[in-house]
Length: 165
Picture 1 (cartoon, rainbow, N blue to C red):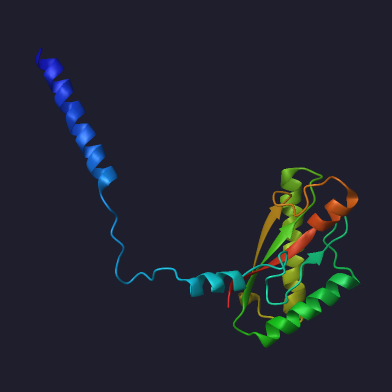
Picture 2 (picture 1 turned 90 degrees about the horizontal axis):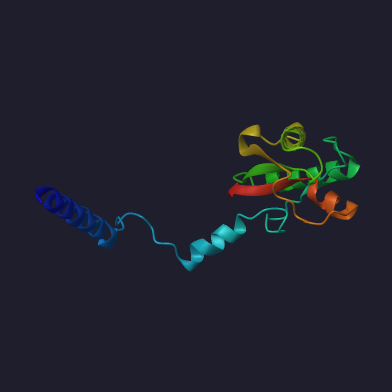
């Protein structure tokens, strides 16, 4: 009988504890800014080149199974470098992407090579490497879910994401 009472008391104590935790209102520190419409607009301005919301920076495209910059890619990067030279406080992340063909590890490595070659080319054009970070998403974030050659071509890219204005 005593054991049943102890179990019941334990049950009541645990239930009360969970109820108290679940009902407590989390206090917002006074020094933490509350998001406003203006800050939401600023987040839109820190967009990416895939969406066309990166202050004029453009996405770089790559041929199949390659991280070589062709003439068109170099022209895009020269234009991007001009924007970065004009806006000296701008920092970007370059995302390397691949199409859906090939294995995960292979495409992660290829995406990394694409992001790094874009960064190196921008550095060669006079942009500080401290303003550029790179990441590879491989085939995990396609722009076009299709399985045609034109869909694959859209997905082989280096996307510019503004990380700081």
